[in-house]
Image (cartoon, rainbow, N blue to C red; front, top):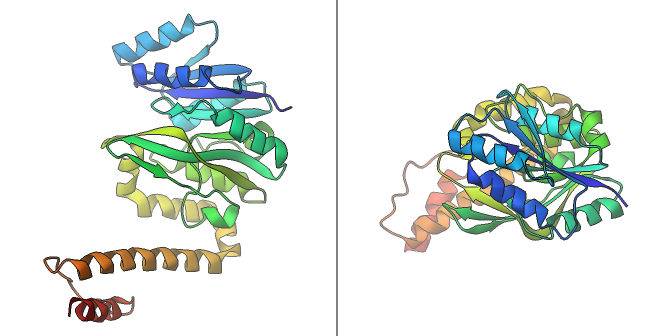
Length: 281
């Protein structure tokens, strides 16, 4: 039976960190250890929460100067003495069976280097989000696994851990590419076992403003993997573009008040404009 710890990273998230820890303490698969890594919180309320958690005998608190979420995760995983380590952001929560279901997957599938699940998003949006996981090729055109995941500690060590120089976003995506770039895969339990908080000013939303720049860095860093799977990457990106275009076409065809806009050439734009005109009659 594999042992598992949970690392909760925290930075100025107030009572949300206590909620995250509480969700860990109520797991049906009880972890061997719960570690909270405070990444230099300065907000008074957040510091009070961390100090309160330090008095909880069920929790071990590590404190460091602000170095980013990658450094916080690495510090927590390094301090854990278990076969598996789950990482959880301080503003998210786990459903009670998250560890039970993901650890069982890793115990039964030696080729899986990490395991996660679908997400139940709450806050600004209310939705079930269904990442698919997979091997390296599945991570080249989009991130296929949530940041909250259970990772084999030896695999984390072998790939070099989270890149602590990445502080603008996509550090999770980069880590999973490093984790499975030379083989193996990430498994995803098809149940929404992560309670993921959405907010307008979240790091995930902010990173989308620099998506092309950040994706370019991933391509540069993992160039060998991208080159090995160039055909699959290009086809996957084209498939995503076609799907987005088809959704736009359906919306515009159904609502005459929406403008078609400029008719583009060479990317299916002319054909789409013709189909919209026919469907509108």
